[in-house]
Every structure is written in structure tokens, then in C-alpha cells.
Image 1 (cartoon, rainbow, N blue to C red):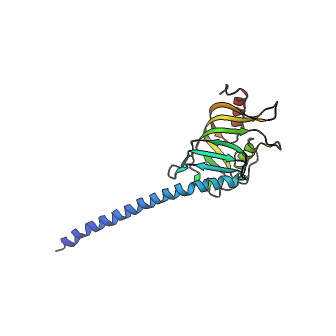
Image 2: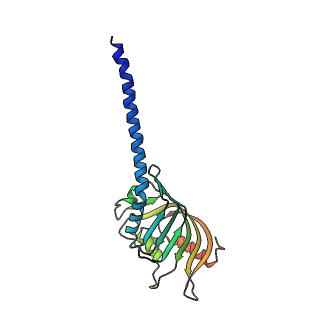
Image 3: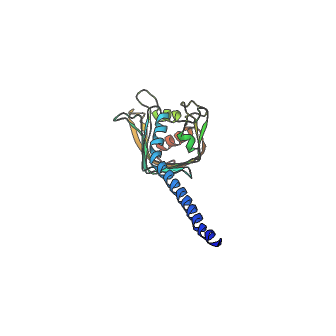
Length: 218
């Protein structure tokens, strides 16, 4: 007489386990969906807040919160959010991998360091020329976002940035022509890699050398 109630209780356990598993899968899917929907706004807001008025726009951004990876199909960086603000850089498909993405998107301490494990950046146009006041907007922007030009140089209010592995592809560099004083685009088709990058000087030096030789030195 006791076997029948025990027999009937087994499907009930299986049903509870199946419901719990389904709930976990649903919650995981919901978390990934929230990440995909919220990440573009968070990433752009975090960068723009640190960039001192510059504006970064991302297209086709997709994220994997479990791997700390985000990809974009395109991006544009302008000197400010004002209509008609000059473009400082623009590019195509790029990828960033960072175990510190929670810190990068959150309120990291000013004296801290955000480590980017891997950054693959495709740049179609990069402006390495001073503005009318003699300032270099792109270098100042890098410093305010945590990557100064000089080793140990000044940065903004946020944390410093360290890039363990940077893979950079640049099609065109816009430089200042010494003879005419005009900004001149130079096709360089440059490709390079950098490791343990804590300041932008090696990248800038390589790109200026490539533009001076018309890309022949890549």
C-alpha cells in the first residue's frame, strides 16, 4: 500500500527540477539580453563621461558578459557632441576583451587601473594633427580616458588604462602639412601590435613615422 504514494512522488520531483532548470535558463537568457540592450548606452556614457566632452558612437555592438567580450561593426569618435564637431577617428569591426569590464563600466577608483586584456581596433581614419589652438585633441582625449601620451603622464579623474595586447589596423592618418599648414590625409595601410601598453607614445610614434613615409615603413 505504501509503494503507490512513493511512485507518484517521483514525477513531482522531476517536475520541480525541470522547472528550476528552465527558470535558470530563462534568467541567464534575460541577463544576456539585458547586457546586449544596455551595454551600448553604458559603454558610450562611460567613455563620454571620461573623455571631457568628446563623443563616441558605436554601431552594431554585441557583448558576451561571460567572456568579458564586446564587438562593434563600426564606430565614430568626435571632438564633442555638438553638431558638425570634427571627427577625430572612425573605424570598422573591432573587439575588446576585458575581465575588468564591470570596473570599466562602473565607478572605478581614481587611482585604480582598468586592464584590457585584448583590443583589436580597425581604424579607417585617424586624425593626428593639432587644432587651431595648437592642442592635440586625440592625445588629450586619450589622456582624459586613462591612456596618457607620456609614461606616468597626467590623466583625467578616472582610472588609468592598461592594454595587454593591442592589434591595430589603420588605413589613413590625417596629419598637418608643414608647408601648407593644412591637414592632409595620408594613406598608410598600417598594421601593428603592441603589448603591455600604458601610454600612447609608441602608437603615435609608429603612425607618424608611417605617415611620413607614406606607409612604406609599415
